[in-house]
Image (cartoon, rainbow, N blue to C red; front, side, top):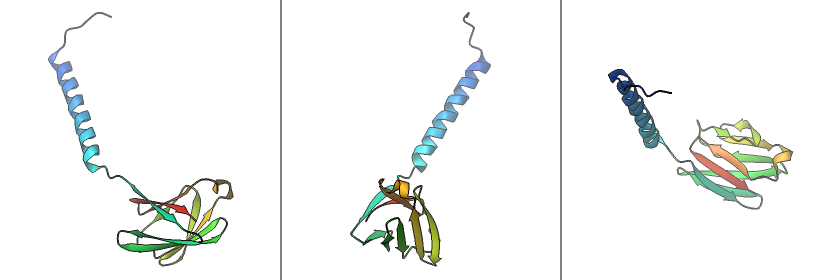
Length: 118
């Protein structure tokens, strides 16, 4: 391929693309929030403090957990189980039996990840 002369239009296109990429990476760096992971360990129950809220986790059966004192407006998510809201601040979590050998992680309000070891 023969070398072509660098035109003003091509130079402007390269500069604009570089500025867009630098702006995107800078914005992503400033807005990034690292998700903190907290560990909840116990025999049949455990308690964990998240943002000045005390959350209790109870093991109700081999593949079922109950999570109490969850603040209103918080959402619980997990790739390992399904949540059912029992009461305003009480949730039930059923784990897929095939995933019991893996650590159980629950994401609280998109900012905190809780590892359950009961």
